[in-house]
Image 1 (cartoon, one colour):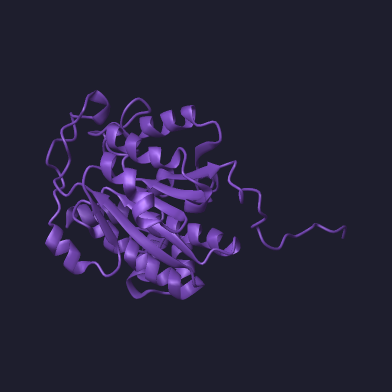
Image 2 (cartoon, rainbow, N blue to C red):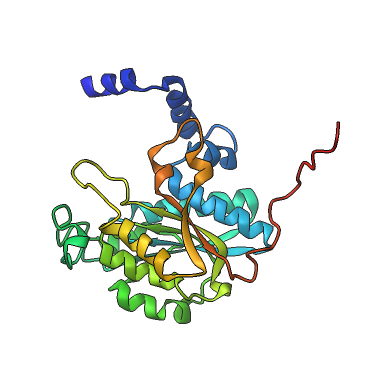
Length: 274
């Protein structure tokens, strides 16, 4: 009780927080508006998928894919299904959801880059039958991501990937997952895809840095790829109020994608002389 009261008293934006809670609780306003203000479950998931689908719509693409790397118990995958349904209703883009996990929990850390001072083997084991009963459309792809990614494109021939949730915790696993995007054909990914990296902010116990974990995997990807780069979402970070999850969003730009230069911004105010 004391902690709840303290949280309210220390909130620098209590009216804003109360409104967001209400909008989320009673689904106040349209789904796109609630995504825009962050009043949806797992707002980072909603933001990435909605923005990806908006881009797809402007490119004339009617179906996209969303991926979660690191499903654990499955709550995030269920949340992606929710956002996929809402997006289908609101803007008419269909979403196929895929979840990658080994189902056995975290493997043994490879070295210091996997942060063994925080992660241990066996964390986040999945109850596969229970999750399968809850899922309505998402496809679970179980096994070592190093192996399952080798056959993903050929087996599933996915619609263009619009949004990716990365929750693999380790540097080693994240680096393997990002390899999918090092040479993926244009037909399987949008020219600008939206990513949420769950383990790049952390706490005083985790102490994530550019030299370990998911941050290192992102840095190395950018160093190796001349035409594909991850960028922070600068438009989010420039807002007056910056929720923590804004810092964990990355946009993957594929500069040589055949549709990268396709105009998608919509009507422009041409600033005629007044």
